[in-house]
Length: 103
Image (cartoon, rainbow, N blue to C red; front, top):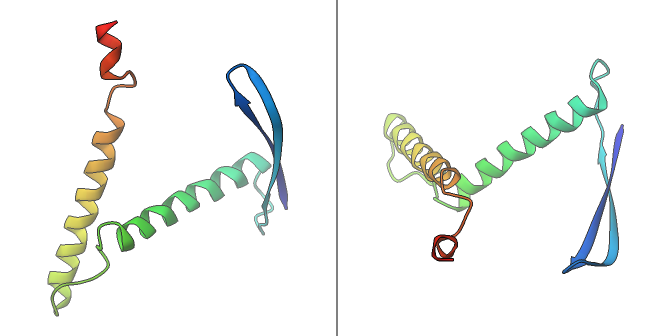
């Protein structure tokens, strides 16, 4: 078992309003891994579960429109590729806003 303690300070401006301490528990049977590797593995898996959830409910990629297996497979692949392209293009957006160039 790996226990991760995070101190999430709630701030307003430069003042700290209060400290929000949260504990995250990672239970595993992998004995040959370090605590950091266990946390990284679990976070990577959670990210994949989020992608699957978004494919089911966001773009309805898991609701198949046709009856045969090949058509459903092609539809699912196209929807997953479109979703990934959208996410990749979102990562290419600049970090500064449009108003930054005007100042």
